[in-house]
Structures are given as C-alpha cells and as structure tokens.
Length: 251
Image (cartoon, rainbow, N blue to C red; front, side):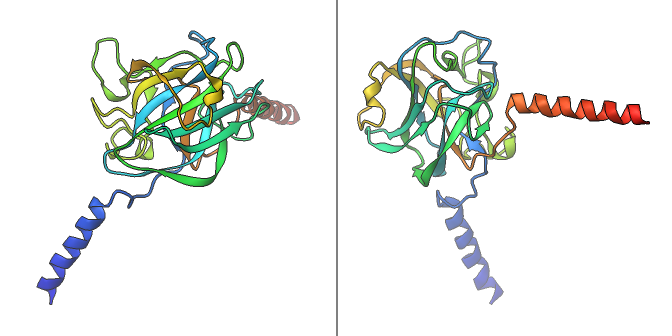
C-alpha cells in the first residue's frame, strides 16, 4: 500500500507546484518601492497620465486590491488623482481615485485607496498602470530607472526596489512583485500620455519612455498595511521625549 501512495502524493505535489495561482501572496506587497529620495531629485512638471507598462511574474497570478499615488512625505494632497490599470489590449482592469487631502491610508511613500474587490492579474502578461498628474501640483519626482550606471540589469541595484517575498531579495525569484531577471523586468517601459481624458478609457494611448523604468506617480498593491505618517512619527517622538523629561524631573 505504501509503494502505491508515494507516487500519488508526488503527483499531487507536482500539480500544486505547477498551478500558477496556488501561493500565499504576502500582505503589503506592491509593484515597486523607490530606494531613492524622490523629493531630492527633479520634480516632473508634466500634465497628463504617467506610469509604466509592466510584466507579471513567470509562475504566479497576482492579486491587487489597492491603487496608490505618490506622496513621499505623507503630506495632504492638493488635488485628486485617478489611478488606472489596463490590460495589454487597453481594457480597464481597475480604477480608483486617490482623493485630495490628508491620506486615509499612507504607506511606503504612497497614499493608497482600496478597490471595491480584489482583481487578479494573469501571470506572464503585460499590463499598464497610470495616474493623472498636474504640473507643479503634488510633485511626484521624475523618471526612475532600475538600470545601474555601469549598464545591464542587476535586480534592485538601480533606483527601484522590487517588492519580494518576506522583504528579502533571497526569496522566491518568481514571486509576486519581484524582478524576475534581465529581459523579464516587472517594469518594462515608462509611459506617458498628454490626454487626461484617457483616465479610465479602454485605450490609454501611452507613449513610451525609457526601458526598465517607471514614472513613480502610480503604484499597485495588495493588502496594504498602514504606516505612521512622517509628521506623526515626529510628534510621537517629541511626546516620548517630553514624558522622559517629566519623569526625570520628578525623580
């Protein structure tokens, strides 16, 4: 009996390994995280839609239930911004408006809004992501690239940190939101469009920018975990110092 059960178990394990959707996508996974200070570099004055074309992982479908707009400091946004996901054919997969004002959910330099339901991005497929931007309003930093100065594509050695399993580059190289390798970069090419009426339009009509790069205004995420805003962190720190001083005086 044991000799018969082993092949059955092995076959079942193989089926699970080959199934693209059978994995636990980590919370707080997002398309990318800039590893440079976007507030210190050039601020793009473009008005229209900016973003990128990206390629989904080789083995896994990806779940998305949040869309985000760049807000490096957690400051209140002056205007609202529409963030949209299109498939490669130009059909809208998901769209949401990041409202003006103080973000209700802020994490990793982005103001996030939840989608009404989770959408699935099919593995080994191209998608577009774009956000409406206005020159000089809610600055989002200029084009960032993942190609180091010495040429080539060395994973996260550029200006973009690709989100990986458990926050470690040593995780599964084909996991959700990860740089799969040269030639299969998650961000294939930066894109922009002068026509703001394209937000939510089935035909984004993007023009291509530099390869292996992205305009960092929009972002895509799953089960985003809120983080304290930078201003709040400063207030908390100041409060702790005040408490310590009071205790010291009493003693």
